[in-house]
Length: 429
Ligand SMILES: Nc1ncnc2c1ncn2[C@@H]1O[C@H](COP(=O)(O)OP(=O)(O)OP(=O)(O)O)[C@@H](O)[C@H]1O
Ligand SMILES: [Mg+2]
Image 1 (cartoon, helix red, strand yellow):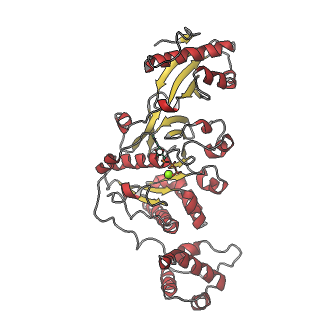
Image 2 (image 1 turned 90 degrees about the vertical axis):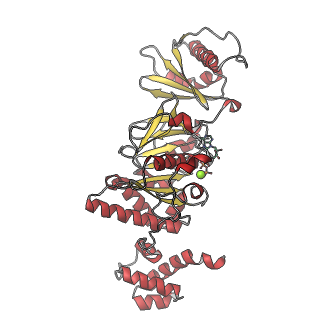
């Protein structure tokens, strides 16, 4: 491989006649010259001509601090004909990632990722790293068992999520793997996975139903832990968890518990959010072992979004350009764009089964969140909740509800409100 200790210097400006490979060498030479101008003596190696960026390795002389290159990132970027570049540290060398001009960028097809054979059926290559290697997600790896996909709108979260679910679904039979899904928009997942044989319950879009599903998953996890059972694996998918957290104060607790102990019961979370740095999500996300972070709107938001400093996630390019952040590592990757045809390979069923009998009732979920100032009050059992729901369906008033079930007017008011929030919408249709 040609390297550039100082480089040959630009023989010609890059024009249409340079091959992609020549361009890589041309830019490596330019980067080396820019560093030399700043009294560094680097060796620059072209690494990978990626779909959206070009990556180079910089080897510095022993003893030269990396900060000297980081400080002149803008000069490095200009040398490579770009207005910005991201400089990352990687096993004793520096990586320079230079975005391509928008018209040069191309999509990464699924085939380019699928040619790497997963080591186990629980491995999915989320995309290609800046050196062209597959970046694995592994459900069995404690560092990555639960995944939060974050990033601003258009960063490629939904596309990445669909890719992950698609690969899991074609690599594992419904006997080995089950899905439950909350799809707020109702069109992000349902058209592709709505009839998947892996679904244990129809995809829900209402956040309240999502919270009930999550309550069920937490119960299922507890049951499995008690029975020492970890199969089949269950993946709980939530498109935009922000909305779910607003529904019910218990949701955060469910998420935290599954993130903490779910792996031992084969229960895994995969969620997306537009606001990975939002304070409201802070506690819910802290237990997630892995984050797949796409472009963040501004540099000031990157710390909260990444959960750590110096990721430069604001320099990500969107369209599936992600950082996979785990306890041990931080890897940039390009996710593929899957074509609609491929979803045809997912095993399908005519009728998705239902967990309706097993999901907690609306009023029971609402009751989990007791008024912190209120006294504990009367304990209600499953039969009470059923009776309360029936009474609410029959149109009972708050006062009558409190009197009949002996639960206090404040608690009755909350159950009444939750029930009608959930069931009132249909009247408006
Ligand atoms: N891996 C990819 N390769 C190429 N283009 C992509 C990729 N991922 C996303 N895109 C493009 O970006 C668009 C938006 O992607 P996506 O819907 O996944 O964004 P999002 O992060 O889910 O946004 P929102 O927060 O608004 O839901 C896609 O329609 C597609 O055109
Ligand atoms: Mg989306």
